Picture 1 (cartoon, rainbow, N blue to C red):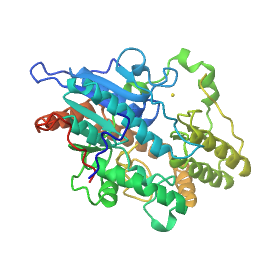
Picture 2: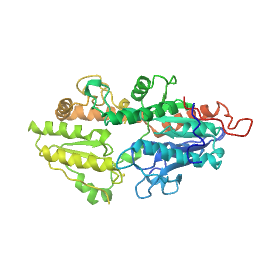
Picture 3: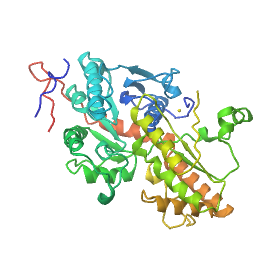
Picture 4: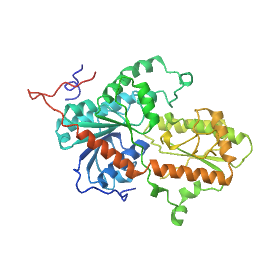
Amino acid sequence: MFAMWDVIFGKSANRRFAASPTAPKLRVAFIHPDLGIGGAERLVVDVAVGLQKLGHSVDIYTSYHDPKHCFEETRDGTLRVHAKRSFLPRSLFGRFHVLFAHLAQLHLTLGLVSGDEALKYDVFFVDQLATCIPILRDAGKRVVFYCHFPDKLLAAGEYTDDDTKKRPVGLLKRIYRVPMDWLEEVTTRQADTLLANSNFTVGVFKKHFPNISTVPRVVYPGIDGAAYAPLSRAESSTEDVQRVLSSRPTFLSINRIEGKKNLALAVRAFAGARATGDVPTLRLVIAGGHDPRLADNRATLDSLLSLCESLRLKASVLGQSGGPMESILDPDPLARAPDATGYLRAPNDGEWTRAMLDILNLSESDRAALGKRAKKRAEKLFGLDAMAREVEDALKQTVEMGPLRARNSHGRRRRLKFC
């Protein structure tokens, strides 16, 4: 048991959702560390907009929000965003990112509860960092926590469940991670409701957090199908689009430009496919968010360019002056099976080179059928409407658990529970 309270500084706004005229509306507050342009941020924005369309009141609290590097809904008035920047740095000499992220969230949350701002909300939706959960519950607030993926498993880079293939971690980092991993588990455990982005994440969660008895409920991230409509002639003629458009056979990788995404795997697998000489015009396009503020993003881009140079691949960097494994079914070594929508492979260069070559060898009819199955599955499982309804249901069930007592009989806050 620890008493920390006194020790820590004392585009899509047109999406359609049918609001029910009789159901009670909720006042929901989101807490998210850094409201940039990553996948987690896209989910937060989509859930928040979806809840608003269902008639609920939504506010987003974050420690950092740059109007020049964010999703449109967070700056055009669609969503109410409250950025309360911490006085703390993001890191110390490029290290201790997780520690400072925890401290920034504590700074944000303590500011919310100390001024009684948190009292006006029925429930909190928290993701990425669970540090604030004990504080919110101490203030009498119910919390829904959305698990993207355990941070403890990404600390050394990309995740692999094969112990023989995991990157070695130095002694000092292992020592540093002990309290960070402990804090992640004990704070996550105190959420009233746990959600996860896929059954895969649920399985990993159960394996690596054995002391948490609650099994997260799966709520798939939503996809705005309208965003994938064909470009107009005017849109297609812009310089950025013209530099990417090509009739050449193209593989596309969409991920943030950061180390844990293991983008080097795509480059090495692509180099292997090119080396066969079967398709000399083959190309790879890597697209994703890149934040020059982050040392990891800068280092990852530099390492990818160096890797391309070492593999004798010509690389061009184009910049505009912004999914769960269940999205793929792979019941057969080839993507020609009746239900197949893609490939699931271990993070191995050779395996992905073979997968790329198999894709290249698909007939036009097989490739069209594969795309049709993939689109149908995405529309069925990853709709924005379904996601908003699932989160709404989880929030309502959490509120129905009843109020928490915020203060003891002497008018002082209860001791925060960290065990």
